[in-house]
Length: 107
Length: 107
DNA sequence: TTACAATATCAATATATGTTGATTTATGGA
DNA sequence: TCCATAAATCAACATATATTGATATTGTAA
Image 1 (cartoon, rainbow over the protein chains, first blue to last red):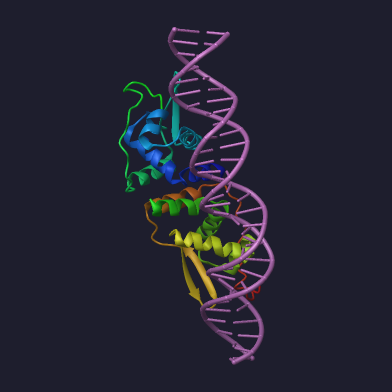
Image 2 (image 1 turned 180 degrees about the horizontal axis):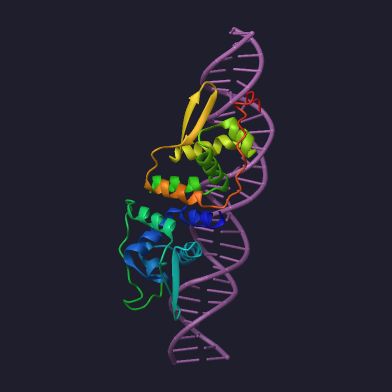
């Protein structure tokens, strides 16, 4: 029950659904890319990324001071179905801004 | 997005997951059966049933003063997967008390 | 070591959601 | 009609969660 509710409550927020979808579409992103692309302040983004990671949807890989988030693989059946459902939502997704490649973050 | 989040937020509560599972296992139940079986006060139960109904998981059929709730059929793919997931949770399910058959409700 | 950048966490506040007891609505019977 | 029962809704309160700005942590380079 706990694990199920953890997955569910992680999905129970429009911001996090957007983040999941964005990473699903664009692949691995570092936090500052997400900040730039989704126009969210850092503490807010960091919080939601942590919730999605703890619920088993995302994984993090640290490279120096950067943290790269991607969809965790493999996802179990239910999380996979949830992600599939999110793929079919009509969401206006902002374009990816690769701030980390075009001259560093400094956001 | 709205519809998806409505489904998710309906599932985002241990009480409602229990109610869903209980009705899934026992079939159609009236509110006073649920009250007796799950030991919940009426207003609390009624609230959660409404949320599950509005989210598309349950349907109601009124028979006189009684309201009978059952799993809505057919469920769409995602709701169906969610229900399937709930079937595999290790939940201690109280036995059904058919108060409505054994001499009326009067709870 | 010091400084700085990226990220994580904390504290305060605002908003949403759950619980309860009281009230209201709807239905059926005397 | 009047009353009783089942169920829904309301109001007050408690708890949980999101947002923000500030602070702490971590890693890198001078």
